[in-house]
Length: 407
Ligand SMILES: *Cc1c(COP(=O)(O)O)cnc(C)c1O
Image (cartoon, rainbow, N blue to C red):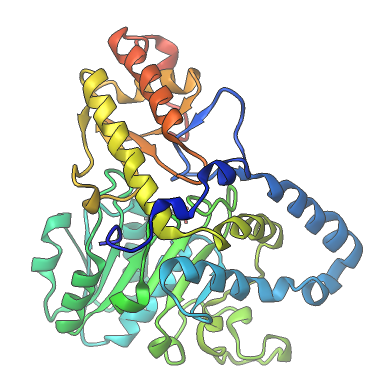
């Protein structure tokens, strides 16, 4: 697995990377798996994009400031973290949209097959998008959702594509991308991977795994800010033949020819749809300056140290919490979840005391570990406060039990 490398984590100075992020005073932020914090340089970068580019260049910014080239340029930089060669990743839209695009193209490549195989640990939007696509196609496709551990056994010659999220958003359980992709291919199916909780969390090698499609978001571990664009990868072997279902003008071979007929663009460019979010990409650009210098193997080793320490301390000091994540770090991503009957209220009590994680129904308290800006001292501090909350029933107050719109 990823830990078996020659890299040691001292190849990175995590005290230095921590200083590159703005973290509010008094906050221990264990939710970078949901929304990454602000890179300090992002505020100035976005301001520059607003004032010097949008403000001064107006529409000429598309060329002069390189806005139009950014979705592919940033895609290449993300590609380094996920084992994707230059020219195989492009940014745009939201992850839900990118899931739809990947799946639509995959189904078109396997017209004789009708099953999309996914698992019950997948993030609901991926399943919802598949349902909507099936309805629009009206060709008799079926979304088959099995337990995560039963995916391999359900790959057969009816399956057009597997659609799996590598790291389970709720428990952090890690699928074996290499073996499941190989199994899919042996059965004649295509493999689509959602890297929402993988990109920037652990090393991914899409090329070695021979993945056909991959998608992911940038506002989680990659810190592009709320609403940052998603990315999509298409294996180079397919990139010039896949047919985009969302055939927008910026995926056209010649957008500014304004032809009346759609012709797909070259390679990954065809997976673009419409106008890219320039200001949001400016924030991502600042974040990628940090990621460009990061050693993802070292990040992974440090993440394992932090999650192992967190589990050890919670199990020692926090009665009533039971581990919901795989115990073996080789089988989990960069987050740790615990079941706790009063999980929602306990998380609110925790947040009120400056420790930010999140809650996932029905009873999961989820904590993300992001070595670029979270260290051992944060882990110890968070568990001290969590222990206080659960040992002294500090969660047992009405104001902690009212559910907000976003949990
Ligand atoms: C976070 C996440 C999403 C979010 O999709 P958006 O369209 O960006 O809101 C989708 N899928 C998975 C697996 C996720 O973890």
